[in-house]
Length: 222
Image 1 (spheres, one colour):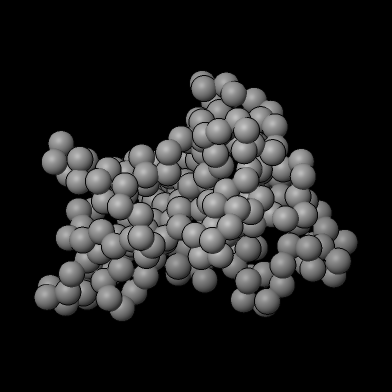
Image 2 (cartoon, helix red, strand yellow):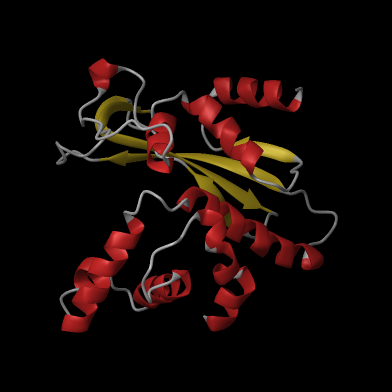
């Protein structure tokens, strides 16, 4: 685990993603704690019930993850770029590198007050559900898959919006993310592709959405 954390250089990335919390808990500690829970098959909820010190750690993790000043979207992109740079020397040159767009439906049927909760259409089930869309951008060489960016999408229509918006300050990162969540998903997907540095040979959506092809074609044509 320590070798992996050193490889992605979390300490160097802290300032780039605006991680400026004044406490002893830094990004390295956060990732170590979350990876330890994952490999031990525990969730934050279950870990908080084990020991008193774990309860304190769980609260700290939740506070950090909900900090709207930290650019988690950029952090994932930077980590992915470093991992890909480490993998490139051992990838066969005959392989084609691709970006994969995955639209994940995140239903929240029991939620009523979640911010930006909306009625969104589930293409797999063919019906409208309360929840969010979660477009994810991934990188692959045919053997390895790495998530490189993501977004949380709500709805543009006020009529379909269930959860009220707490703030709309466009000067803050949290405000920009809320604005992003209400834009057209095709355009947001292209924005995610623009931010990711390495040039890819192909773009593969795992769902049938022609407007994404059209938006991406306009982007590569300038």
